[in-house]
Each structure stands twice: as C-alpha cells, then as structure tokens.
Image (tube, rainbow, N blue to C red; front, side):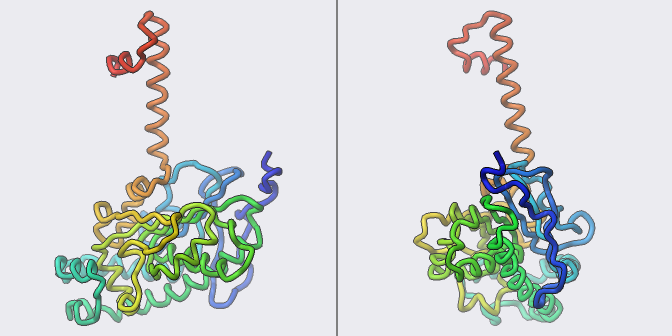
Length: 322
C-alpha cells in the first residue's frame, strides 16, 4: 500500500548534509517515531537549553503518534549559545521589565527603542549578537529545507511542518523559497507556527498560503515582550506573526491566541504540551485519555450483556457506571 503512494524507499532518516552549504554548518533529520507512514511531520526547534531541553527532540516528546515524525537538527552550536544566554539573563530581565507598560506597547504594535527601559537596553548587546546570528542562519536553513522537500526525499507523501520561535522562522523561509518556485504547490500539507519572529502582513501570507495544501495555524501571544524586544529592529515596519494575528484573506490561515498559556517567549519550549493541545495537535496524553474512554465504554457494554441491562439506552447506563 505504501508504495502506491510514493512512500516506499523514501525517508528523511538517512538525509544528512555531507558538506557545508553556504553558511549552514549543520542540517540533519532525527526520527521522533519509528517506521514508515503515509503522512510525515517535521518539527523544528527554536533554540536549545541546558538540562531537560538540551536536545532537539525534547520539546516534542508529547507529540501524538500520528504518522512518521522527525525533528530537524540544525546549527546546534548557535542555538545552544542563544538558549544559554536567555536562560542566564531571564530572571534579571523579568525583574527589569515593567510588565504592564510593555504589554501595552506590544498590543498597540508600536515598539520603538524609546519604549523600552534603559536598563533593559543595557543588556541588549549581550543578546542581540547571538539572536542576530540565529535569525540569519534560520533563513538559510529554511531555504535548504525547501530544497530537500522539493527534491522529494520523502517521496510523494504530504509533509506537515511545526516549529516554535526561530524554528517557525525556518518554516517561514521554507515556504517563501517554495513560493518562488513554480510547481511546489502541495509539497507541504499543514503548517503550525508558534511565536514566529516573521512578517505577518497580508501581502506576504496571501502569497505563501498558495503553496500549502491544508491549513496554516499561527499561534501568537500579544504579551510576549521578549519576542517584541528581540525583534524590535523590525517590528516598527512589520506586523510580527508571533505577537498578533496574521492578517490575510486566505481561508486556510487560522490564528490562535495563546496568551492564556504563554506568559513569556521561553514558555514555547516549557509549555509545549499544553500549547499543542491549544492549537489542535494530537498528543500522547490525549491519545491515552481517548483510549481510556473507549476502554470504559467497552467495559460498560460488556456489563450490559452480563447483567441484562436495557441496551436501548446505553448512555444512561454509562452515566450510572461512571
């Protein structure tokens, strides 16, 4: 059956960049699930951290077993540098920030150097360099991802892409590269962007949406002051997708406000389990709940047969058992 749909003999597990491509130093697919399936998902991590989140796979542990799944391993040295700096400065940054003032400026979309506290700008030089390096490299990695998908390394199977922060930026530039090439329509099935530091303007997304066969989900948080601060040099001219809804006439674009889940940009990694549920992605915990529900229903129906209860109204029996 798999061979009929172009899945046989095609996979991303064996793909690894053997030599440096442009500025890219590292590009490899790591499996998240075993075996081959007719649908394929690639998850893209936005940064690395020490301890629990030191691997590319860590944020995606709760992804439900739905199809063939990979995570993209890319530029780990730079992502780890960025993550370590964010972790080390986080507590200090939180104490510096005047929360309500920053929430107001992010909500209004007017974020300039004048609105940020001077004490926060004083540490900007420490963060800006690794962030800028990763911004640049994520664009190159996204373009290379488009080339890999366009070459059908995965066969003719539909591919869904999900990523947070700089990982979402990788996906954005992948879509942009595909949009520049005729005949790339349908290579990507669904896209989920979480806290994306990318342009959210209508003109841009009307064009990019044409290469996506399914839906595009944009998960954003209006109060994500860290993203607003890191992306401040561009946010004056652009609407940032990770801070507000994408404005587009394309029906495939779905905006999801994650403000009740995401209290800061680092939560995109720490609260991924909850975020996946919020944007409608199947999780292992959700699958477990579903399995337990079906098991309970099965047991009830077995009891019906054993005790001779009225099977014409099973919902009332189920209510009594529960």
